[in-house]
Amino acid sequence: MLARLTTLSKQLAIYGLGDVATSIASFLLLPVYVRYLSPADYGVIGLLLTIEAVAKIAFRWGIDASFMRLWYDCTDQRARQRLASTLFWFLAALNGALLLVALFAAPVIARHLFGDVRYTTLLRLVLANTFVVGFYFIPFHVMRIQGESARFISLTFTRSAGTLLLRLLFVIALDYGVLGVVLADLVITGLFTLLLSRWFVPLIRPVFSASLLREALHFGLPRLPHGVAHQVIAVADRYILTLFVSLREIGLYSVGASFGLAMKLFLSAFENAWAPFYFATMKEPDAQKTFRLVTTYGIAILVLLAAGLAAISVDLVRLMTTPAYYEAARVIPWIGLGVLCQGVYLLTSIGLNITKQTRYYPISTAVGAATSVGMNLLLVPEFGALGAAWANTVAYAVLAFTAMQFSQRFYPMDYEWGRIGRVAVAGLAAYGVARFALPRQMAPLPSFLLHGTTVVVVYPLLLLAFGFYHPAELAVVRRLATRLRRRTAAAPTDASTELAGEIVQAALPDEMIDAPEPDSPGADMAPVASPPDAPSRR
Picture 1 (tube, rainbow, N blue to C red):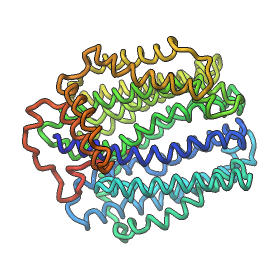
Picture 2 (cartoon, rainbow, N blue to C red; picture 1 turned 90 degrees about the horizontal axis):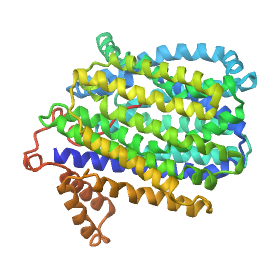
Picture 3 (cartoon, helix red, strand yellow; picture 1 turned 45 degrees about the vertical axis):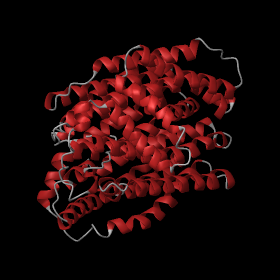
Picture 4 (spheres, helix red, strand yellow; picture 1 turned 30 degrees about the vertical axis):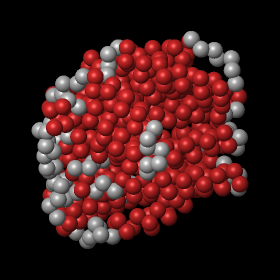
């Protein structure tokens, strides 16, 4: 167990570093973009991203999740080729036909969403780009399954960095506006399709298995309505906003949401490390103890991030944008709280994947989607963008609760609710101290640092006061404080990995640490069967 958790920590750190580097670059460019794109432009971009998100789910038919799950059932390279090829040819034929229909209907869709057919070309370009990107799950899943996290991150980082640079060129240097954002994505997709061909070539063959496709669809097809419903939760707010507010307010909401979604730096890194981890761990005798521990600490980190983000929301917008965008700050805490609920959903619904009861995913997300639509229709006419943010939070909370209930039915887990409750109270109290006990009339940067630091300091102290930490965890903190001072010359990767192992060890009872590590199932197939990774969002 210790070795597996140490590996999860290492994978999470690697994925996180890649996401952080890319997102920091994008974040720092926001003050530049807001000077070249109007709030209305951001409204158009937000709607295009909405279309892209829904099309991405539809173009995969849920079988991206099937690919990862069924890979662990393959016994040799030929079986893996048959799996990858079957899914590839199925998607190429069906999605090719759907793309043609969507391109033909683009003028109608553009008129309905934007109120103007001049956005038809942009819409068609986004749809074509999404069709191609829909095949990327094959090479990227293989990298994650095989534990090639460094390669995965180097490729995703290069892709994101290239997109940012081209957007700078097209939006700022060439003044292409929204078109520049779309063109940058197209150019990078073309280049990366060529680059990723080295992973496609060993897997794609002129073979097709109808029985394997049926199995993949049986597992993954419930994820299609699940994925669509999940995107309804994610984007219904923007669509319903178009019915009641201007493109300017949609743009303000999109900017505020982009700040709130910064919490996904941690969540997406965790996602990339989580699914292969629990698939590889699920047959171990101490699997549930492992999952319970990860859930407690995962929620603790999410609460810290949500409290900190809420405390600095006003400072963040003042620091990074112009006065025209300051109203965006009011939605940030609620979007961050929605991300926290998404994290709880990812942590507590794994039993449905482990037991292959994926048919309950679309039920859970349908309940969440209905909540999202209903709450948006109820709140947006009265409260505008703020009402949409509230609806977002409620919808993700309902999704997390519903999916956890289904998961508990088939894979009961005894979570540490007492410790989780203390985490929630500490997070709320730390936010309250930073928000209401400190002055706000300061320059943006000092205010940002003061309020953010307050949450980071107060939160763990409150956890200590509430008795959250086990005695062994307190002991390891003291040891780490001493040893960190001696490690200034050590290689950063080695030091961080060793420290991750010590932190994990401190959180485990002695009998778990001393127990011998059992052989991981499927280790001969994928190196990640002992060192793992994670799935998609939706």
